Length: 537
Image 1 (cartoon, rainbow, N blue to C red):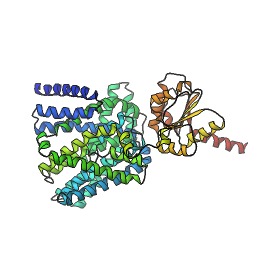
Image 2: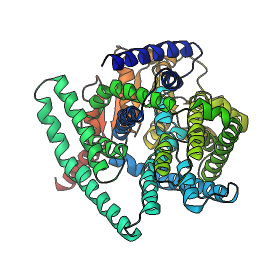
Image 3: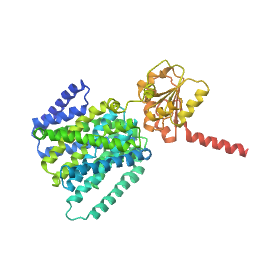
Image 4: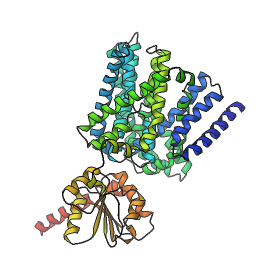
C-alpha cells in the first residue's frame, strides 16, 4: 500500500512539474502526461499485471470522452452528419487501410494477414488527442472540425471489424460465416438495449433521480449509466467506448444533456490524463535508440501518406483549405491502433520487434499532433492561402452602435438581413462557415464577417451592449445554446431574439434570460389557423 501511495504521489508531482514547465512554452498537457509516463516507467519497475490494470483504468478516459462527444451528437445531429461519417469516414478508412496494406506487402514483404491488420490499424487516428485539442480550442464545430469528428466516429465503428479480422485470422474452430453472424446478432442486441430500451427508460430514470435534489446522487447515476452502457457493449464483443458513445447519443435527446456534460468534464479530463500517462509507459528507450532511423522514417512516411490520402479524397467534396486542415488534423495514428497491435502480437500475427517499432511510431505521431493542431491555420496557409476577400471580412473594426447583430447566415439570417437592408437599419452578420461567407460576399453582401458568435470576445468586439437587438438564427442546437449563454454573461439588458424550430429546442433555452424565443412551428400553426378562420367566418 505504501509503495502504491508513493508511486501515486510521485506521478502526480512529476505531472504537475512537467506540465507547468511545458505550459510556459504553450505545449499541451497531453505531452506532459506522456513524458510523465515515460519518467515514471524508468523510476519504477511496473510488472505486466500492474501495466494491464493501469491500461484498463486509462481506457475509461476514452470512454468518458466518447460519452461527452455522444452528448453533442444526437440522432438528429447524426442524420445531418451522415455525409461526414459514412462517406468521408468510409473513404478514409478503406483507402488508407488498403494502401497501407499494399505497402506492407510489397515493400516490407509481410504476409497478407499481418499486412491487413497493420494496414487498417494505421488508418485509425487519435480520437482522444484530436477531440481534446479541438474542444480546448473551440474548433469542434468549425468546418474542418466537423469533418474530423465525423471521420473519427466512423473510425471508432471500424475498430469492431478490425478486431473481428484478428479473430478470423487466428480462429481454429469457428467458421468465418459463424463469426460474422454472431457479430451481427450482437450488434442488433446492443442497438435494441442502448437505443430502443434506453430511449424510453433513460429520461424517466433521470427524472426520478433528480427528484432526490442531490447532486452527488445525480452524478452517481450518470456514472452508472456510462459504465453500464460500456459494459453491455463490451459483453457483446464491442469496445467500451462505442457503448459510451451510444449512451451519450441517447441522452442527447433528453433535457439533461448540458448538465451531464458539465458535471462529467472533470472526471473525463482526469481519466484522459491517466490514459496519456499509460501511453508514455509504453515507450521503450532502448528500442527507440536501436531502431531510431527506422521509427523516424516510418513516422514521417505514414503521416505524409495518410494526410495525402485524406486530402485527395476530401478535395472532391470540400474546399481545398478545409480538406488540407482535415488531413493534417487526422494524419497521426491513434490509441486504438495500440490495442490492435497488442492483440495481434499476443495472437502471433506480428513479431515482438515489429510490435515495439509500431508502438513507438504511433506514440511519436500522437506527441506531434497537438503541435500540428495548435498551428493548423499557419500550416494550411503554406499550401492554400486564405482568400483576400475573406481576410477582409475577418473581424477588423469596431464603432457599431444602434445596430442589429445577426448570428448565423442560414435561410432565416439571409432573409432577415435583406429586410433590414430594405429598411435602412444598420446590421452586422456573424457567420463561422467560410463557404457561406464566401458566397455571401460574392453576391454583394458587405455586412457579413467571418466570426464565431459563440465566443464572447466576438460579441464584445461588435459592441453587443450598444446594439438594438441580437438575433440568433443558428440551426445547431449546441452552438445556439453557447451563443445564448455568452449573451447572458454580459449581464446587460440586451434585446435577444432566438429562432427555434420546435419546443424541444425552446426547452434548451428556458433557463436563460432570453427575451423572445420564436418557435417557427408554432407561428406556422397560428398562421394556418388564421387562414382557416378567415374562410369560415
